[in-house]
Length: 401
Image 1 (cartoon, rainbow, N blue to C red):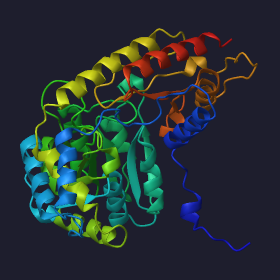
Image 2 (cartoon, rainbow, N blue to C red; image 1 turned 180 degrees about the horizontal axis):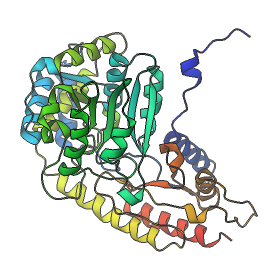
Image 3 (cartoon, one colour; image 1 turned 60 degrees about the horizontal axis):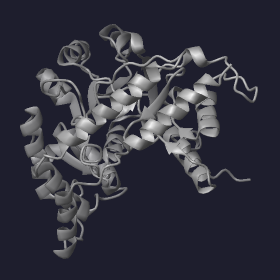
Image 4 (cartoon, helix red, strand yellow; image 1 turned 135 degrees about the horizontal axis):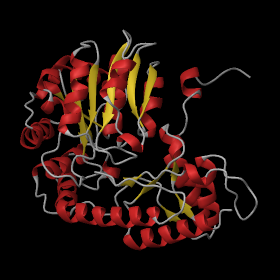
């Protein structure tokens, strides 16, 4: 048979987060009671004023093409957001808007990475980072961080990883899947390494900026180490904080030449994100934020519920996340045990499949994030779902021999 798919596409791994969610949904449709804790999606509705802005845009006929980098109105709102929240000042030609922050990340890698270029990625990392690098024919260089370092890489690790082919450091803080947040001091220490290597750029994925449980201003590299601002790309979006996952709008700001290249990539694919979504995103960024404290308070309560439940399981250890809406327990001590059906749990994937089949709870194995021996629970779910899900996981672990 004639080869159809390109090598780079044939080698892409489907995201395990989606696979576990899909499998859970299939079981639910077949009549099983499934607690889905695999998907990182807020269970809250998009705030009313944002929904109304989207509706008003439709009624006003704002349903036509916008500029490829995004509408002038949303670009201005993003500039205001960066100055207000992060102390960063940008011009319109330094801003790009994409179909979710995922596409913005993809555009950046496609615009800058040549075959064989290396991209340093702090591990555990969101499942799409590595595949995006490979799609750009780059080489992912993985720096593992465990609970011993709070799931954060060290300056020594970064220094040792950099080579003449290094192109980017990709860093997500607060992190998916661990919830770890780099402090300003920790970013300064990493930034000092990057300053010694002027060929390496910094990609700051700040999508969980508004969902954090630490005190003080949110630290992002371009603000903390201003000497790096001319080689920083700062990425954000409306999906997580504003419960707008389905609206699909992300954005980034950085040096004008980089943004120009990213816009060229975008011009050959999606052109621009929905004009209606862009109108709603303006309302999100410029509108009232009074819904955010209740959102974050609910996430904090749910975080504490899940951490307490995990720490009550013999063989599981669990750190307390600084932000986002995930916990990332360590399950090494459960590996090697046997299920009631006599199957040995060899890997974290085996454990997660056991949780799904035996307990009806969908979670994601740590190997999906390149850190085996862990699993991720999303607590962006209703309290009742979490309470029942934790009870089921505890019961399933007690059954292991």
